[in-house]
Length: 361
Ligand code: 1HN
Image (tube, rainbow, N blue to C red; front, side, top):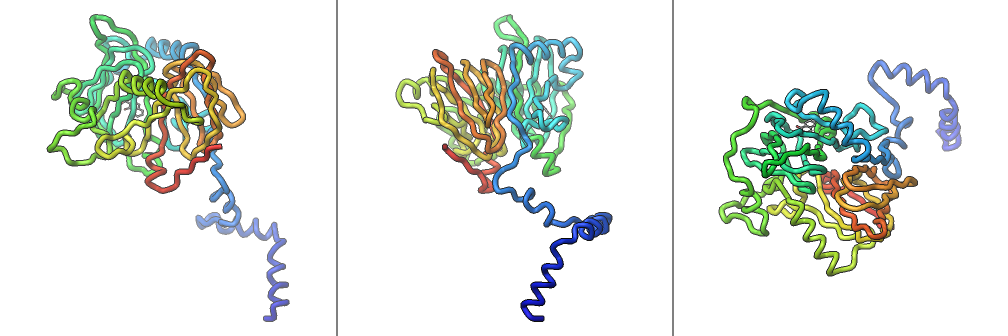
């Protein structure tokens, strides 16, 4: 055919809406779909997350509701007594972002949350109260507010609340898990322990003694995907931030921000989740930053404002908020209030894939 007649034939293919619709109807029962109708959504020019920013107030909302839940069900019966923090745009999916789960767990004095294990990795960030414990693979750690504790994939774990020095109080922590990721890969397994509580086989503090002082036992030459330190106490991390605050100027975007590390690799403490602690000095007014890893923040100290996309969220101690992927984020600390924020994201997975992007505006 001549170029002119070819062009004419092609032009005839452009205005046939009804015929196309009929064609789509014909191929649907054959489990076929036309890529050309969805190409732009499948490979957007930039991230188009369905997630929205959101904040959960602790003192006014979450704490009273958790205490009401304790009237309805025990930790034992619930297995884990948790209020899931669902992204308002992803209801019913137990997801705070597309890849991450977050919830607030309550354990009352004397209660036990029975031993089990699962492929999903978990982090605990202690929000309120002290004197609960978690036992992970035979080592116990007592919880204090601000501690960051890890339950590695497939590790036995149970929790309890025996108090300290004869005093006990309700204890609440933020759970962060890679549940939506494991669901995506269909790679989840789980099992209950035969015993309600694991036996304790190592003294409290032994993993921190062996791995938590920039030293590693000489015969230990294996790098593990999850950090061998399973409790990173707040007192130490807070002290590090205090020194930074005294000695240097804050980063214009992050303030003073440190990432937790697996001492065997220098990488994130968990294979699927990175964790951070940052201090915004009083009156700090941050610049705008965006990154492809959506993040969950837990406020430890101080009041301030998170400007996320076009919205502003005033936060205070113990509140939780979520920043969706690629949403512009600006953090401010109120006058006279040093702010400390814990956060976590799926950054190590994006880094392993080579797709993490950040912009400092
Ligand atoms: C789980 O095992 C815990 O061990 C917390 O405390 C939250 C959410 C979904 C599935 C398992 C825990 C969980 C969970």
